[in-house]
Amino acid sequence: MVLSECRQLLADKTIIEARLVHDFFSAGWGINFIDAEGNEYPITDTYGIPCSYDSLKQAENIVHQVGDCPVYVDSLFRFSER
Image (cartoon, rainbow, N blue to C red):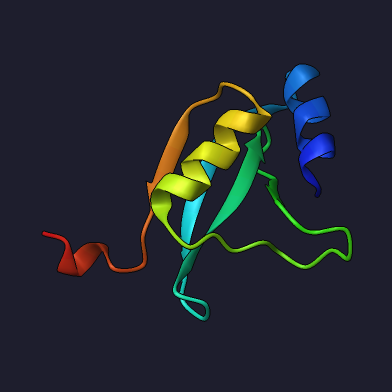
């Protein structure tokens, strides 16, 4: 889903949160928006390929460009962050 579609879903109150997910393959961060039923909507480019951002801060900035919603960070490396 491209940014404009995410903005529309957030405006329609369909999206309730954003989850930032560590992308193991690119070593970057992906963004999935979640609706009330638990469905995930990843941010993609116009070809439908999920976008990956270089840093956590950059991914957070993209979420704030879409709108204000709770942001959760889901890292695959949580076990090493303790």
